[in-house]
Length: 407
Figure (cartoon, rainbow, N blue to C red):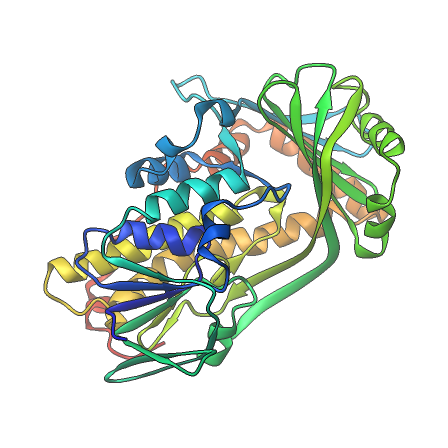
């Protein structure tokens, strides 16, 4: 089997990337170990995604946004950060400049379903499902993807979107910075007596963190992060005790609360690849950058990264250049690296500070909250980062166009 491009992984980043290349003229194969049926109708997994304005724009351009029921899209109008038992709150409001929200909360399974529906409408893409990749290799003439069955697939380039634990990334010799936080996120939905008024809460309590994200009606998405050795205790709590615990940690802000559905655990590991490409091979999605969820940037970085790569490749094709050439991939890497590196390390620093219960750390984070609240320029910068309205595409130096060495 021969293709122009092989995408490994049919998650949101991989499928969105295929959608972004719909007018490129490329013959594309997407290889995924899950079944088509599971991709088309993904199960509820408890996760809800806070999307930025840029993610909404990209999904609208691809025809994905319109496939989601507007009633299942919950705007986030306000965000409050709470430290321990302190009554002091760092608050972010939607700017009064015709901006409609800070962000938009949508359940993960609904996003995946909408992306697959749009992907399934493409005519120049082949989905190879129920299939695992055993080996990837590249040379000056092209690439080979060897399936678990032993069958080879030939192409001009590979793009890996096969999770933050990417096997193809390792096989291609790309190292990564991995950070095991030693913590587990436990997610679920909860109904509550009082309205959330489209407000998201991030509560940094001692020993654990609680995020409450507004869904439609009097329903919120709950994200608890705790040390992994405490996760089983939280998962095993009786529902009545669990409800009361969340009510108490929110100081009754939402009144009586009741769990709806299951609790789901997710171990937290952050990953940032040290390179995003090598010869005829590039990384997108979590294979490039897998984030801690506290700043809600992981999914959004996956969408913006695939858009950057697709744009560089499409530009090269329109100019009659090789879409897999090192100069094309280097431009993608430089642009995506400039946005992901600071966010990745900044997020890890925030997690370290707000999960450290020592007295110096406690005093420092209280000072950080007050500084952020009382300095309008600082607060404005944080708000802009939260909303991320536009893609930052740099005009890179002409010297890069003569770049021929694989970094």
